[in-house]
Structure formats: C-alpha cells, structure tokens
Image (cartoon, rainbow, N blue to C red; front, side):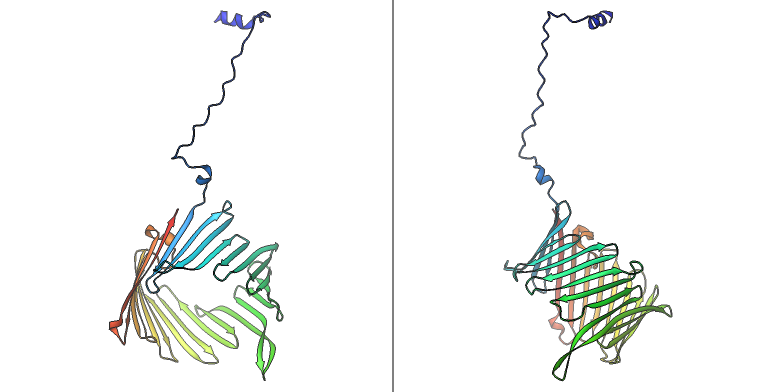
Length: 336
C-alpha cells in the first residue's frame, strides 16, 4: 500500500509517453423487433366503441369516440345500419370545454355551440346552424352569487327584443316578445313565463306558467309513499299519481286522469343492482307489458357486467292477444 502511494506522489517523467484509451462509444439500441410497438402507437388514445340493436326497428346504432390532443378534445363518430348493411345518418362531433361542433354528413350541415367566461361572474353562449344561417346569442351574469343569475338572449337574425330571464333558488321568470295574429295582422306582445317551487305541508308545490296556461303540481313524499295531484288551468284538467314502496326491491306506481278516465300502473322489482323486472298496463292504448333488464336500466354500459345491457319486453294487446310480440334491445361497449 505504501509503494502505490509513493508512485502516485512522484512527478511525471517528461520523456514518457502517455497514451489514453479511446472513449467507449455508447451501445447501439437494439433494432425494433416485429413484436415491439412504436412510440406513437403506445401513446394512441383509448377508443370507445358502443353498439346498440333494437329488434323493433331492426337497426344497429354505432358510436365511436376517443379523446385527442392530450384529452383536450373529444372526437365522436356515430352512424346507423340496417340488416342489409346500408349506412345512414352519419354524424361527426368534436367537443372541447368551450366549443363543440356537430356535423351532419348527409344533410351537409353543422351545428356550432360555444360557451366561455368573459369575466368573473359573466358567461357568453352562442349557437349557430350553418345551413339555415340561424342561431342564438346569450349573456349570463351572476347576481349576488351563483344561485342568482340573469340571462339575456336573442335569436339571430334578430326579430324583436331579446329574452330576459332571472333564475333564483325557487325558480325562474322570463320575459320575451312573441307574435300573435289579430284581425289578419301580426302583432307583437310581451309574454311572461316562469316556474316557482316552494315547500307546503311537508311537500313541494310547483307552479308553472307558460302561454297563458298555469300548471299546479303538489308532491308529498316519504320513505314509503308518494302522492302527486296536479291541475291545469284554465282547462281544469286534473290527474294524480300514487306510488307505494313495499321494500327496498318492490315498488308500485299508479296514475289516473280524471278528465279522460285513462289510467296506468307499473310494478317494479329489483334483483340486486344489475337486474330489474317491470310489468304494467296502459288503458289508453289497452296494452299490457312486461320487461326484464340485465344491467342497470338508468346506468351506462360501462357500469354493467361485461359492459353490456340487455332488455327483453313482452307486449300483449288487450283486444288481440294473438298479436303479442317479444322485443329485445342490446347495448354493448368495447374499450380498445
């Protein structure tokens, strides 16, 4: 160990020749094999394919979508085809947070929608139909917080005054101009529409006024029962609905119209989360029916087992039982 330390401390000999070894070159990357995937393919966005089939119309509906530009936008293609393979109603849509574009390829038309914030508490909205050259512009402003809003909107080409709408926690009220014919002459008048909600007698009362018609609806609901009477003025058309829950899996609904004496009823039975049985009768069309859902009825195919939803329905006409029909509907999703 001492000799090596002396050699390291001795001065170099000026007559000696020091030859340094050449720097080793970096190892070459192995050539890509047939099984390796290119970088652009590994970074390909996931593609979602959804197919629906309805035996009543014998038509397939397809939807293909994916996120592009690093999830900045969503691209969607949809079309239909019948049993002969004929494609119809192709639609192409591109949507972002602030802008959406929907193209109808057969009609050679496009719908453009835009929405973005102009300032804190102020939002701009626009909609445009390319083929008809018509659309709507709107400005929405917050009043005393996001629960209170004021919206001013106008269709273009503009015909009259813009529509003004005030939204608040208990409903909304709008004021707009509309055209009425009086003595073979068009006359523009101001129209007031609105909806109000409030709690009365342990229930919710709703009043909706539109085109000189007032609809009043009251809803009482607890854990086991719901009672919903309603009346329309000035026609005095009355109806009521009654719903009764017999347990976490069974529910019965009944609806009756006092003016026409038409009624309908529906019984629902849940089998777990993914199966539902429903049966009902409608006196207006004199039809009884029963259906079975595999996959959550109101949910998406993504949450269903195997990402597939199936519905079977049996319809039995009261006047002609021999013409009963069995229909089914299937919805399947693939993530590629």
